[in-house]
Length: 168
Image (cartoon, rainbow, N blue to C red):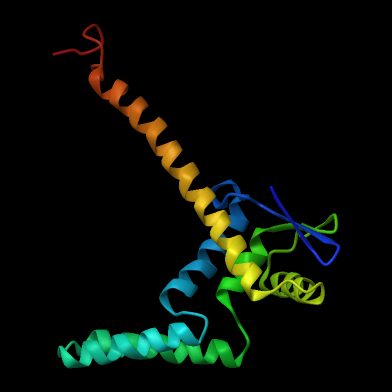
């Protein structure tokens, strides 16, 4: 867990996306995929606009249409004050002041974001904490991959079946 103190309040975060309980992990993936594909702020809107312009210059009409649809969804999300990055962060909150945030439904995540807002947790802090969790998740994934690679290398050098089991 990662503990963060904000204005005399303690927020505990899960420190690794891969170690989330299954349903939380699925919700996290959902919101992170939305954030990466559609976007969640003005910078994503601007990035989409530049991308659309480039697609149109190259005659890539289907790609431009897809990007326009994603940009439209980004504007709708902003209008509805839906922030997929914020929702992904809320999933990572284990507790606030010792109270476990167990409701990871969309409405539960909104309540978690409201509580974070009440105690003064900022967008900047959100970005930094998500980066820390992401770095740790990538590090753990690389470490796990290295371990699996060693196991696979050993396993692949051994015959799959022993000679006594294989029959002609």
